[in-house]
Structures are given as structure tokens and as C-alpha cells.
Amino acid sequence: MTVSDYFSAFMLLMGGVFFLAGTLGLLRFPDVFTRLHALTKADNLGLGFIVIGLAVQAESWPVVAKLVLVWLLVLLAGASVSYLVAHGALQRGIRPWRR
Image (cartoon, rainbow, N blue to C red; front, side):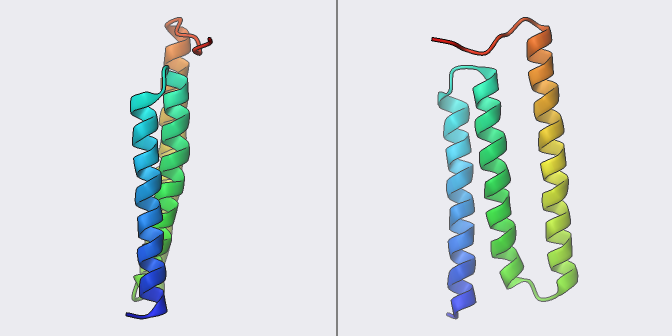
């Protein structure tokens, strides 16, 4: 195994850790707003790490460009959906959780 293989494996592992953290946040946080925060931050970073890990192993630049394009589209979709969910929750009278 080469250094790039180890780096790629590390990036993929880090991506998995961030996805796991986002899932735990979804299950453990008390309200819709904190759950959205956990999911969007962790998933954006997790997918970023996975794209980096896969880009290192890619055989050509067009493949890397497609990976980055997919990541950017997921970032845009995640932000849009999070806004819509939070806006819908506020319209229905759901307020952020407070102690």
C-alpha cells in the first residue's frame, strides 16, 4: 500500500465518523432545529472527507470534477431542504427548545 492509499482510507474513515456523529445528533438532540444543525454540519463535512478520499484514488481529472460537482449539489440541496424544514417548523409554531 502506498501513502495515497493510507491517506484515502483515513479520509474515508473520517467521513464515516462525521456521518455517524450526524446520525447520533439526529437521534439525541431535543428539537428539530438542533437536529437540522447536527445533520447539515456533519453531513457536509462527512461527504467532503469522502470526496477527498475518493478523489485521491480517482484515475482522471474528469472523475474528480464529477465528485466535486456531486458534493456541491448535495451542499446546495442540503441547505435548501434544511431551510424549508426549519421554515415549515416555524410556521407551525414549533419554537427552538429552551431549558
